[in-house]
Length: 363
Ligand code: AGP
Image (cartoon, rainbow, N blue to C red; front, side, top):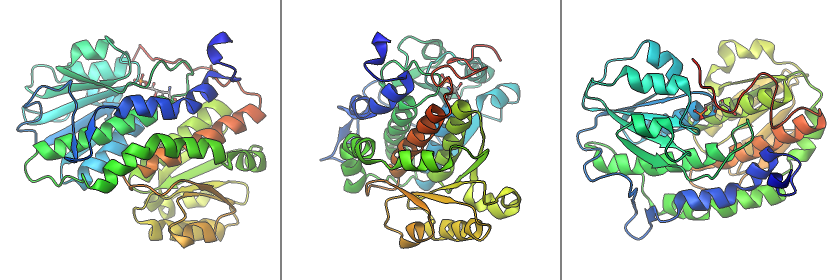
């Protein structure tokens, strides 16, 4: 209990540690004046000649990888996130113009190590993105970038996701400056948003309406999470966190997919969390109207800049106005709080959910 620092659970402590963790992640890595990223761990030329990026990961780390896929694609770089457990069994073609990024909090996930081993000897370049200094993945990859989140004890990954995504934003910027034909997004807006990201997370922790949402809906049996672009990755992560610690059914999907199947499951008893991150928000508002027409309760996670997002919602979880590449980190913090508070009201074993381990070291 001493290690919990007065919090009821490690998970809650780690959620509240996110402003500090993010300061550590970003510190010394951005030069706002030159609008450049400096990842000093990477030798010069690390990315020269890279034409495509494969991101391999599992669970929450896979959702961070999906987030990065969206950012890289937006910058004109060929990028694909893969479940490392699938990649290791059936690796796609790679060569010396391919960068394979292993995203793993622990650096010990067997599926992710297996994916890296599967492409050894092909000429593909490998990069570990991890939290744990000296972990196995750092020895298996040519280069390593640390996310600097600090130790994470709770089985449910929280601060590591935020720090993974923040590090991946920096990596995407660095890559886009090094890749021919790419379009860097290093506007002052992005650097300004990264600089205030820890304070924006703190504002959410201080002012969140998550308790009202958890109180209203924690007795339901099924929950849906939807979003587009980076919001799709956040929707999947929101659902994973929710199912992992509440033991209730929760499903995340791209809002674009709603009418292609999931809508059949939507009823007045299935709360729908809609994540708005500034990408195609108008289309997501249409999806919200569709679920409202089936009487589903709607929780909008939004900065409120798109009036339609709040107009049709039963509850709003507000995020500060920020760059759209960063908005998903903030939206995810709101969803972490809802999952934690709902699981706590259900008296679940939050730090050690049934059947789950912090690090999955067998395939
Ligand atoms: C998420 O809350 C879980 N702890 C799990 O999905 C985890 O992200 C996954 O097992 C990957 O672990 P890693 O980041 O240590 O590789």
